[in-house]
Length: 416
Image 1 (cartoon, rainbow, N blue to C red):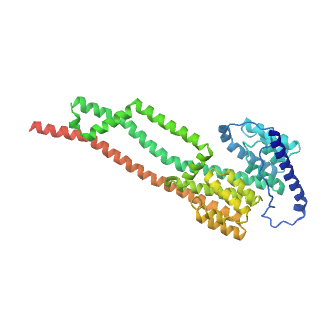
Image 2: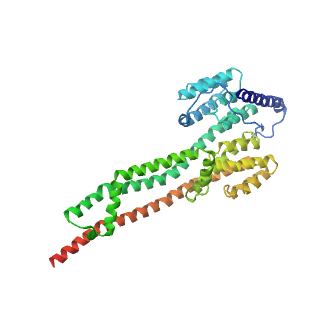
Image 3: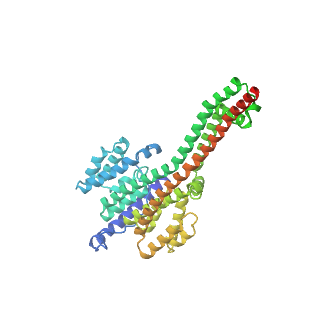
């Protein structure tokens, strides 16, 4: 079975290479349509070529995101300076800042030295170079605009990294504020309230009836906070929920359900939906501008999407485009997940033949809207947390000063 898959991949790769070779003389003799438009080369996504792959764990892959971006940035600089690709690869292999990535780049250089293309060398390492990246390099090599496409890859990766940081910052800041408020209340309950409790019970010999129900309730809650059993149960529940989320989110059905909820839960909808639109529009625009056909571009965009509910919408769009229906009709069917205004803009771009330009504009517009949504979320959470803290402070003040009023009143009655 494995041998059959290997032969199938090899046959498919050979077929695509023959098609590209057949187009090369035509590309050289045919007058280009525009200086700004590269030839549109239709590329079929391939799996990794077997052999030569170095296993890299998920945590290591996350740490290699920036080194990979810098690797492509250095390749662009060297090749544009006139350094041959093979020599550029050998040079950058020792400058990646990562031993693992350095070995991978050396392997890619060995592949190129052996007569393979750059994209073929990258395709042997799908853990670091996914289909979208490999196909962009393939399109760049086929059209003779490798450095232009690689620069787009660098810009794209920088933008996706900035997008990820925006999302994390937008969602973590309110959570950090809430956790800080809870920590302050817990410290007050653990260290301040016990002093007052001991003073009322021991120094003033007050009974619970004399202190009042509010004060005794606050002391009881503080006692729960100080209980080791409470924290064991709380931490156990938190860890259990986290592990359950991790397990469920790694199943196809669970990931789809969670991603769909992200697009509809009021608190995070404004962030998640705009982030998905930015990722979709930026990716599709880059692929179309690099000369990749609309069908393959939709496939690669779908595979690269972090939100799988959004990716399902693109799968429907891809099938509709292949059937001659266009992008508008399938997007209208998914208005619950896909913003109608974006559908209107894409339909206009498709009709005018400027879908690549329109998607780029959509990405820029929604990136600005994402910044505004993140600021609005933070501005909304802050006053809510402050109001809740104010209510807690009022309750604590009433609970602590109530017994003092009782003591003062009792002292006045005894003196009278």
